[in-house]
Each structure stands twice: as C-alpha cells, then as structure tokens.
Length: 114
Image (cartoon, rainbow, N blue to C red; front, side):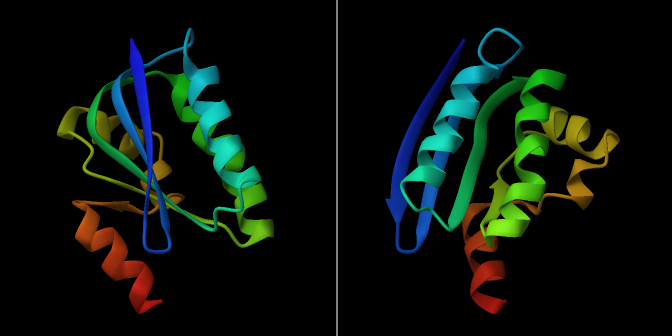
C-alpha cells in the first residue's frame, strides 16, 4: 500500500512516500508528480524515509521524468531512503541520474549552493 503526502517548504514542493510503490500503485506516484509539475513546481523533493519498497514500475516513474525535467528546468531530488531501497536505486544506476541525499537539510543545502 502507498500513501502520499504533499507539502510546501520555501521554494520546495515535498512529496512524501509512505509504504510501498509497486506496479499496482505506481500510477498514483506518477499522478502526484504530474500534479506538482502542472501546479508550477520547479524544485521537487521526494521524502523517501517512509518508503519500504519500490518496484521497477515505481523506479520507471522517476526515470520517465528525467528528460522532461531537464528540458523544463525542474530539479528533483530524493532524500532519506532506507538502505535497502537506496541499494535498488544504486544497482540500477539511478543514483547517478537523480540526486539522492541522506536527509532533507543536505538536499536543501545542495540546491542552495547551486
């Protein structure tokens, strides 16, 4: 089961993922990201602290936005992934494509330094 929460903090739109992202609910994640983009979000932070599992379908959602975000000048980062979930991102090389941070302050600090 997946639960999503959206919040705003300074210039960041934060999308909190709780539970599991799999093939049956990855469309919910996709819709949430689309809504953020349509609302004008330019800095999207994904809070992965409560993410217990992500399937290839869930990872595919993130990958599907990489090129569009690059073209549109939208920045997206992920923070707080549990070690087991982070390993999945790392094995597929997504840690090279999407900035992944230990915690929220590191993510915010990295963008403020850019």
